[in-house]
Length: 318
Image (cartoon, rainbow, N blue to C red; front, side, top):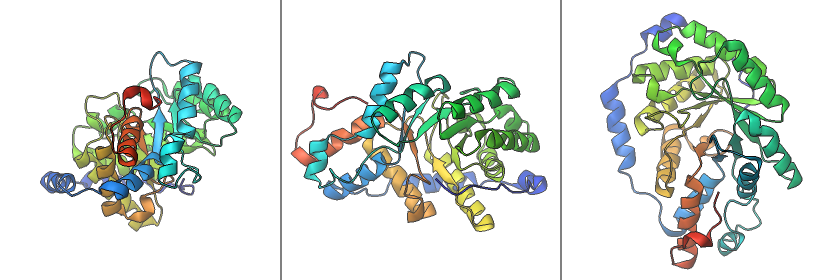
């Protein structure tokens, strides 16, 4: 993860003047989707890079200790060992970046990973996920509880009402309190971009979140009607770049929601490399929030290694 972000003073006048050129953003998004992607062994190498950046996630109402345990085991060994051996990557310690669960399942995940002698981070959503509409004190307590149970990364959600009504200072102050409640845990701030209405609001929310001390900014909860899209990502990445040029501090980026195919993961990696550079192509500055993506990546690696497509029973489910 990035070094601790001390936050920055909130310049409300500057924030209020921000405008985004929507047509330019849409043109850039169209361009990135039209680019040629790596093929054959180069594609497999990029897909393994994507695997190491995945926050392997389960956020379902029917989560149990047993399926959280299975998630953790898959995160430790995300690609079949014999497939990794064909690429000479079986001894390189390939794992996902983290596992991500609800606060009530953090202890289960920590227990499973400890029993497997793994130091893989456990991330927890918090602060009234996904809506962020519970009282502030209960949201803060949820963060403290997840950290107490062993979560080392907290994915908080902003109160969208504050963004939609232009209450940027109030939003800044809330995120600062979440930052304090996280203690030594790293904080990813979910903007729920599908509910922010305009790209200008996305840029403003990104900046406020970074100024308030976020280690990462994240597109979505995965529960909104619209989640991680390329236009929104471009705006957030430009905000990250602007913030870095302004402060010298690198903030990470996490798209989440609706990212299901190996091809999509390659587009995301390409976008990050072009917008922010190779420094961001590592788990401490880039994550992919996903639950079903890993299975498709493993299928593509299987095809490259064997020349055949795997039947469903041939690859362990995440």
